[in-house]
Picture 1: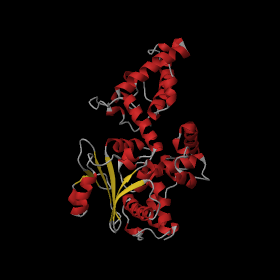
Picture 2 (picture 1 turned 90 degrees about the vertical axis):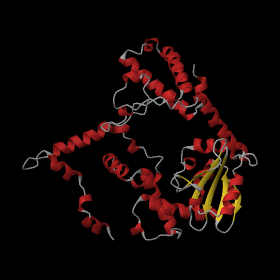
Picture 3 (picture 1 turned 180 degrees about the vertical axis):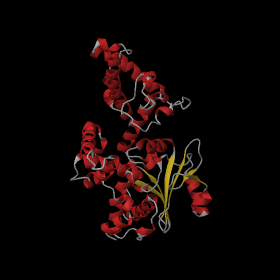
Picture 4 (picture 1 turned 90 degrees about the horizontal axis):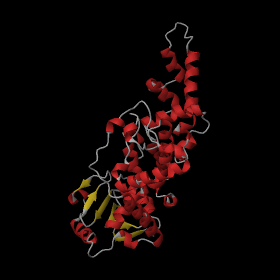
Amino acid sequence: MGVKQLKEQNPDLNINIIDILSNIDNTKTKKLIPFLIKLFKNKNKEIGDDNHYLDLDRRPYVKEMSLGLCDTQKSIILWILDWYIGFDDIENIPIFVDYLDRGLIDNKDISTYQTMDDMVLEIGKASTKEMLSKDRKNIMIVHDDDEWMFFKPLTYNASVTYGYGTKWCTSMKNESEYFYRYSRQGVLIYVINKITGKKFGIHSNNDVRMGIYDETDKQIDSFETDIPKDLMMKLFGLLDLKNNQKNYELFSDEEKDKCDKLNSFERFMGEPDLNIPLPMEEVMNEETPMPDFLPLYPQRRMVNHMPDPLPLYPNLRIRREEVVNRWVPELDPNLHDPTDDHNYIVRDLIQQQISDMMFKGDSAIDDLP
């Protein structure tokens, strides 16, 4: 089916910005449209560098498809796509097409797909087929037969790769702390059905004897996995911490180093105090986007600012306050008064940099006063 035919079948989606602006103009000759166009373009210029849709280095496919668009077109089109589809889902499309072209997609009738989850499921199955035929040096296989494979992921990249298509926290891109935490605390095993492509994440630690999660990250009972009873008993034994090594103990020195750095940073932050309520009413403001910085003085936060999450981490909050209070006077003694509006803005910007360094585990934080 061609694009022209789709436009005819979906007139409600065949939208033109000038037509939208003409609906605002209620003059008979539509003489206000040039003025409205000017306002529209001026607004785009005001946004300028603050428009995060113009910075797409982490979204290669979205960046590629936006080539040739001017900044006005890019900010409008990408905002619509991000809002209604989502960049994460858009980035899945070229992956799906690649698997489809290579004949690795089982359900080739795209008209039967209702949600993006249907596509992601097919991608997960295809990636499983591909992974099973590749090098397995970054995993430790603990069981393998014609239908089932159990293994321990031994690197974060392997966890992301083999967990593709799931919603497990241990397989999230750019969120390695969950994988390293589970690996340090106990045994983490991924289970793959070679025939159906189904995946299960299973773990144990000192508090949990066996936790089983399906692809949606929903905790389920063992009988819901369709894993044969004898293999489930084998899994149960593999999760016993008394007789089995934690994933961390099987890591390479390089992977252990990554895990250790993250663990030391978490100790520096302190244990989260989840009893402190966050003022969510300050988040529920759809008129303006949240800022990237974390306000230092909560009592002076505007309603459209995000709540400061640092109170959840007492050690980190105290450390940040100490650094700011010592560093700011060294830059300019006149900035030490937090009640002055100008001082507040400057301190806020300084605090933003310090918070970013802390959350990223930047070692340069140790060099601050």
